[in-house]
Image (cartoon, rainbow, N blue to C red):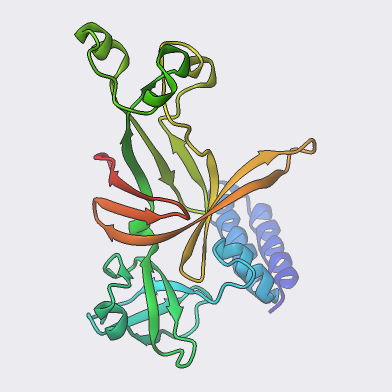
Length: 269
């Protein structure tokens, strides 16, 4: 039955009930029925693959990763995955990935998972990432260093010595940096020193990349710095690629092009 005919049938019933002066008891359930009909009627509209991808908010061009929800029956050797498109569950052999420590976040029922399938046999997984475990607020500590004009060039970046205790307590305290990895591919920097504050005082802290978006691409994590253009749209201005080295409930280690960075999970998560 088409949505339009359902809607007009409901209006007809509604008008008849009004004639019987029973408006008070009828309007609420009929309005509810109309809303349900409209919502269910949306299933009559065919959705193409591009719409499905956009709704998931996960897949990037060229990404062969398979996304879905972990189902009951997962073991150290098998992962049962309910695809995001609502099709029948798939079973992946994860025994080799487990031996090679390529399981990042143990699968739990209902968790969102990312599966990188084997190139020769798609029933085998080369890598598994628990997306729900990856999300959250991750932090690490950074220490300041004396500004260049306060010390000679050979000492820049080194641990200052022979400084008064009062100076150390006031200026040389570590800060927490980090990133809040959220749903819908959103990431927010945590603990960055404001630009107005960064230029004051005798010490300086390392710069923090201001990532705003994140994506998975064939097992790699892409972090994007973005900026709004004159039309208000966000444009990617730089991208850093990271590989997961370790992912546990309270520990994350990422390998970037020129360094590894360890994180600990914020206690409130």
